[in-house]
Image (cartoon, rainbow, N blue to C red; front, side):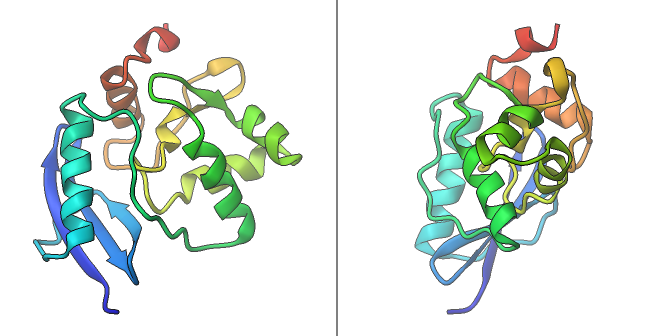
Length: 153
């Protein structure tokens, strides 16, 4: 199967979604145009519903490229409910590892927003970086959108 990409405008900028072999493999802050596939149509509809506050959890097949550790960190991030956050330390504890590699893996998340790396904070709930367009401002916007803004005060 060939990789297909589509794009949509969102409150945090344009997002491009790429699928390969029946799974979403990346989300990026670019406009790549539109390609049709049932899975990409589902992803667009779910992202629209998320930004309309009509969806609290995505239900899409995902394929995370990278090491087993990267995949494990992404699996842990997927467990964080909408409106909640976890720290790098929380994820490190769940994976029985140090927090710094967790931070690196979060920064390398190939499917942001859908895999909610924006819900991961520094020690004590401290606001940390974000690899998406707009950096920390985009992270804050996503957390406010999800009702987690009280966690930032």
